[in-house]
Structures are given as C-alpha cells and as structure tokens.
Image (cartoon, rainbow, N blue to C red; front, side):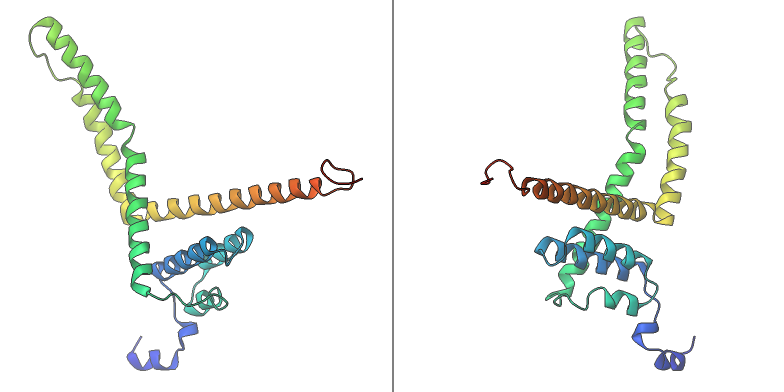
Length: 186
C-alpha cells in the first residue's frame, strides 16, 4: 500500500491491531469499574471489541463514554496486564514440572544419602524430556500470543459469570418484592 492510498482511506476503514483492541478493552473495563457500564453491556462491548476489524468498529464502542484523560496511563495499564497474563500463563505451563523434578531429585538425594555415595542422577530422565516439551510449548505459545488469548477467554468467562450472578441477585430481589413477602405489609 502506498502513502497516497492511505490518504484516501479514512480512520474508520483502517485495520485495527491487537494492541488497539486491548486498549479499548482496558477502557471498557475502566468504564465498568466507574459504573458507566453494567456487566451485560460491558460483556457485549468486550466481545465486539475483540471481534472488531477496523478503527471505526472500535470507535463506536467508546462514543458514549468520556475520553480518557491520560492515554499514557491506559497504555501502561495494558502493558502491565499483558505482562501479568504472560506470567500467569508461564506459571500454569511450568507448575507441574517444578514439583515433579523436586520430588524425583529428593528421592534420588535420599537414596544417595542412604547408600553413602551419590548414585547416577536418574531424575534427568524426568526433567530433561519433559522440560524440552514444555520449552517447546512455551516458545510456541509466546510466539502465537497464547497468554493474551487465555487472558481474554478468562476475562470473557468472568464477565459472563458476573452477569449471571447479577441476574440471580436481581431475580432474588424481584422475588422479595412480591406482595405478602416478609417485611412488607400484606
């Protein structure tokens, strides 16, 4: 695409990047936290944000919300959230390997101590191949953006669960408002 072609293309038609979608998602989360959106509306807009292809589609999700005073803070929040998601994902991927290697090494250490000499370090046959597989999964997952996708899935599930909980609470409150319920004159 040449620079001249970009001149004829409006912002609404330009393709949005993942970082743009994440910024909109962060702004929607802030609006939810501020009480400007309810859970159902937040969930709907969040799904539309991650499905958006252009800036125009993203812009429509924020038109009725006040502008963010400091864009830098929003960008920093997105980066921090991405780093946190990556750390959580790495912990989940490697969390079973570390205790398994620790236990097998402890068994090897105990048997070596009991026999009086350090025997062949056989836990390498647990740690090595399993670690190689996990290393491959880690590199492939980081390259494909798996931590971000997993965080997005978890956020959508959390938003859905919060919406269901809110609906249950509203339903329970509605049931308490029926005539003849306790605390109300019959």
